[in-house]
Length: 238
Image (cartoon, rainbow, N blue to C red):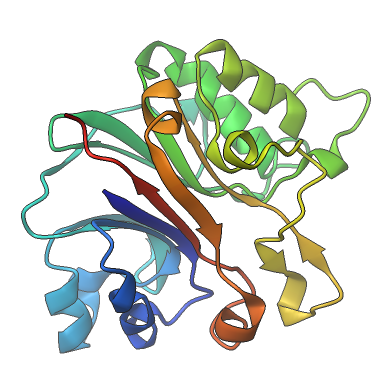
């Protein structure tokens, strides 16, 4: 199975064809339009099998799959003490595994923006984490940990590890969080401002079957987005 996660930086209807050569089974795309409200026929046809959430029809979080793949949206809560966190899109793939698509936001929260949104989401959905694959734009890295905050990037990484879920890039490449050698973002397309903020986390049943996990190169992708896509391939189960 081949999976891509990418923050396309908007106008995905004009960019989805840049991913076609990879022939991915599942695309997890942040900042994309709602296909059902798009007037772009080619985009609608390509997105025949999808799930999508968002604040406006022009910018949201989508999971797109090949026609033969079964996508079932899961009813996980996004309400933490009367505060709705965003954006998280849980679904079941082929009745085989759960996938949690992520695009964290500041969400007008003075204290719990970005990784804090994911931390909150995990607190209210811990009981549902059962071998879940988690992928998307976390807008977070260990370099921004704060000493007096209990929901830092490193705290979320540690908490997921307790559930047997780890970053596949870090495990596959033997790198530490905060010391990544390959960025996934060049902030505002500035090559001098590289960061690693996009991730695919998974349990051992994914990490042990990983064939490759690669991050797109700036010379190809920077003209389309300040985020680089992550290409992930796993061996089929026997």
